[in-house]
Amino acid sequence: MIKEIKDQTEWDALVTEQGGHPLQLWAWGELKSQHGPWTPIRLAVEQGERLVGGAQILARTMPRPFGRLFYIPRGPFCLKKNRGEVLRDLAVWAKQQGGVELKIEPDWTEMNDWPAGWRRSNNRILVPQTALIDLCQTEDEILAAAAKKTRQYIRKSATAGVMVRRVTDKKDIAKCLKIYHATAEQRKFGLHDDSYYYDLARLASEANLIYLAEKDGQPLSFLWNLRTPAVEFELYGGVNATGQELRSNYALKWQAITAARAAGVKTYDMNGLLNDGISNFKRSFTGAETTWVGTWDKPLSPLYRVWETALPAAKKTVRAVNKLRSSCAKPS
Image 1 (cartoon, rainbow, N blue to C red):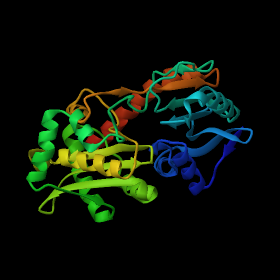
Image 2: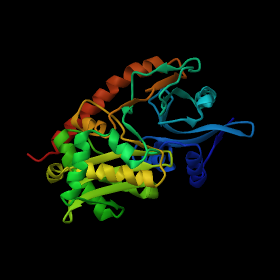
Image 3: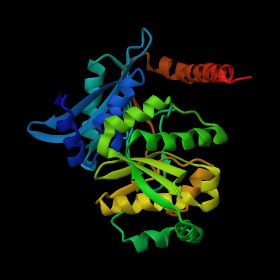
Image 4: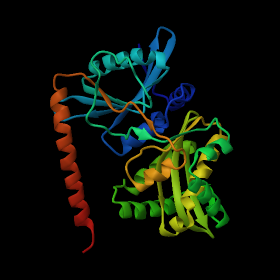
């Protein structure tokens, strides 16, 4: 049986109790609703009086005649033994709601018995490779797994006078975003409007962990995480030129890791590894990679294959239009 939950306190308590991921929190769904074409739907999956799992589903209405796309970021959440049952029930629900597909990207490292009809998707949203730190270890054990240079840079940044503090007010968040804009310009990746980040700070409230590294009051680098008791998840970060010289991002990340451990969080997730310098920096803290099962689809309509084929072309067109708009907006 599927039960929709419409109360934020009830939903977030369920995510917490079931060890759900931060992207399953109420605030993340609200953010996507306010800044995109997504409608969040929070579902508990029950068998009789027994809760077996849940999922925050992001729903999007596609152009006719495709119907609706349903997407679950880093979910559903459930015990391993209940995964097949939960997926079957969610797929039945999604089909009844006029879905063309149900797409999931769970934080599972394995799934050996997929229910009938599920297939690996060619259209991913989240990167499946990540670096995790088990926060049940001692600080010494966590440091021992880090690269020698990483341990040196953590100490170096501390002796250089780098100070790290958690920030919450708009003025400090603005300092973080200034660094983020410079980092994005240097590394050539896109950003949301600033209102997106301010809304995240407002909506997620205490689940936000925003850290700013400074020296003598001057901003150097920042890290923006989301937290549940199960996982602290890195969302955004950046460092300016002075911060790079002082290795401030090493002290920054170490502060975030130790603060999460002190709060009783079980796992620290550095979120997304590619073949770039940022990913190598992340790897240096753990020396290992974790690969989630990736992106999986449950086709719900005969139009699924048409939609999946059209989607890459549509994405390419949108990227080209956005690039053109960006270049036209730059002063000559």
